[in-house]
Structure formats: structure tokens, C-alpha cells
Image 1 (cartoon, rainbow, N blue to C red):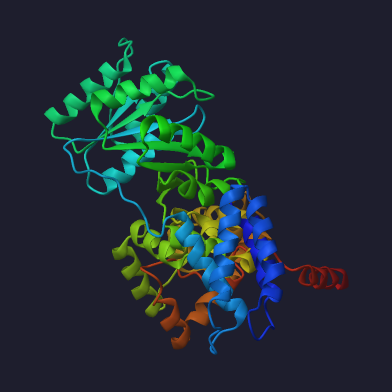
Image 2: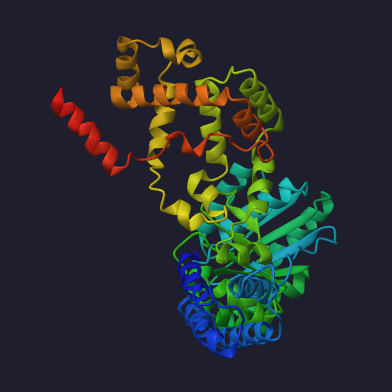
Length: 465
């Protein structure tokens, strides 16, 4: 989402490299570039202006440290100011009541219903007993959707297709949750294509009846500055306690994430980063600032690995690596672990220098073919791939929908990888990964497209034959 902004900021920082000191003269062009970058990212004009002025004041007010360059010092200041702009630290939910009511509000199409299920699953993962409430009584499809998502996540959904007053329905749901000793009630309310008085009055009625601990606006990040205006209107009417930004994985320019806290004073609590239930994260301003500046987000990657990867399986794999018993079944497990982490694109997006990795010409579709090839092998073939003869390769390629050449490539590269891993120094590095993260060597050739020169040489060899 922040790719364009990241690129523009990098260009601005380049202008400061090579200067011995920070001065008003060499800062002028860089600050102008930063301002334009923010405006092009759809950041609120006043917010962009104040941000650049604060960065400039901080830069000119500090002596350049001998250990770093002026460019590095500006990056540090921009990072600090971005973090401050988005809220300094994460904001948790107030769950002090039993039950605590969280009311989700927002425009039609912002993703409220899916977000309600994602939030419920997140709280359930944190050992909270949750009740979902289908408060959009005007759209039967919304009730159906929430009930389906409730079944998928194992969370009860309270609905009443007959009750014409949503505040009565919400009250009944809260009473049920209190009777059953549940921790949290999440109400999915109806939206409109635009803010109108009828919707606002209905939301105020629900709020007065159930007295929510949290009134959360679910806003589409793609709205940019419009999301800021929408949040300001809802905040004035309802007194919002927080915001959840959805579709942060899309092609939105990031303006909402950078502006919304400053304009409304409401913290961004969570963000939706995909369509799956698990594509839901706590909003950490410092980590988002780090991603925007191209410095990655290793902390989030490690946390995700710790959540998604089975510690016992990781320990078992490390032992097999050390004893050189690593086979294609283990490798298949590693591929599937990477899927749990969101695939290579999401992993690379959290690494420092991710822009350079993005240009590495990685063919992520190839990983699907690798999985298909391994799944078409017998257990014995996975254990001893070097013993697979031509007839077996032919059967495997047919079963996986790939070519014999692709089967050969997988086997040869895997055997080469095992050979490299016999080196104690390599093994020490491979088995000391982050919380059991997949240790597949990126440079081994798996999942990468052949370079054009290599393909030309291969074609020449074929012609000679």
C-alpha cells in the first residue's frame, strides 16, 4: 500500500546524501519532495504541511552526529515524526465490563461484517468469549454472511430476522451475553452509502441502549482523505473511541492511515490486510513508519512466525536438519509454513530492503508447482529423491501437471541444498532462525525464474546437441 510513498521518500533522502551538514539550503528540496510525496499519497493537506514543518524544525535544531550522515539523521527524524503522527504506540480495546460491548459503525461497503468476524476471532484467540450480533437488520445477506463467518470461526451469532428495532435486538443480545458470562459483544450495525440523519439517529439509539465500551469506525483505507472526513462526521455524532482501517493490502495510497489520527484524535486500533479471517493486525505506528521508510518490520514477522508456526514441529525440523535427515516431506512442510505467514510477498514486505527483494524476479507461482510435484511422490521417493528414475519422474510429472524438466530441477536443487547444508557453518545459521521460521535458503534457486543469460546459454547447448 505504501510503495509509492516509500519510493518518493527515498528520492528525497538521496538529495541529502553527501552533505557534511544539514542546512536550510540543502534541506529545502528534500522537504519539498517529502511534502509532495505525502500529498500524492492522499494525506490531508494541513497534516502534510504541519508534518513537513515539524520535520524541518527538528532537523535544523539538531547537530549532526559524527557517527551518522545527515541523510541518516533525517530518516531517523522522519521515522520519529511519522510514528508520532500515527499515534506513538498501539491502542488496546477497553474490555473492563462484563460483557464489554463493541459497536462497529461505518459506511456501506467498508467491510464491517467481515471486520466484526475478524475482530471476534482475534479476541477469541486472546481467550475472550465473544458473541457476534447481526445488527444490520435491513440486509438479510449481511445476517447470512455473519452467520457463515460465525460457523467458520466457531463463534456464536445472535440474530433476529423478525425484530424491526435494532436497539431492542442489541439489548437482548447484551442480556444473553451477561446471562451466559461472555466477555465481549460485537455489534455489526447497518451502513449507508453516505452519512444521513436516519442512520446517525439509529446508531445513537443503539449506543444509548447498550452503552458500548468501544464505538469503532470501520473505514476503507482506499477512501484516502474522504475517510478522514467520514471519521470526523461519525466522531462528532457518536464520540468514536477508535478506528479500524480495512483493505490496507490494496492499492490505496496510505493517506487515511497517516491523516486520520491527527484530524480526529481517534487511534487506529486494528487494520485489515487481506480477505481471510486471520488477515487482521494490531496497528503499531512505529512498525508502520518503519515499513513506509523501507526499513521492514522484523518484529511483526517474528511475532507472526511465533503465532503461526508450531514450536514442536520447528524443533523436530531443526534436529532433522542437524542430522542431515531433511527430506522432501520436510521441505513440503516448510512451503506450507510460508503460506501460513502469508507467502513470500508478505514475508519480503516485512524485511529491510524489501524494495530490492521485490526486484529479484521471484516466481511465486513456482511454489505451487513445487508443492504439486512433492505431493505426487510416494513417501519413499520423498525420502530418497536421488533414487527416482525416469519412469517415476514421468509418473510424477503427469500427476502434478508439470514437465519432467521441472521435476528434475526440483530434485537436483534439493540435493544441492542438502549438500550445502552439510557445512556446519551453514547449519548453524539455518537452525538459528526466528521462532521456527522457515529456513529454506532463498538463494537455492527454488521459486526463482532463470535469468535471461542462463536461458540463452541453455538454448545454445541444445542446438549444439
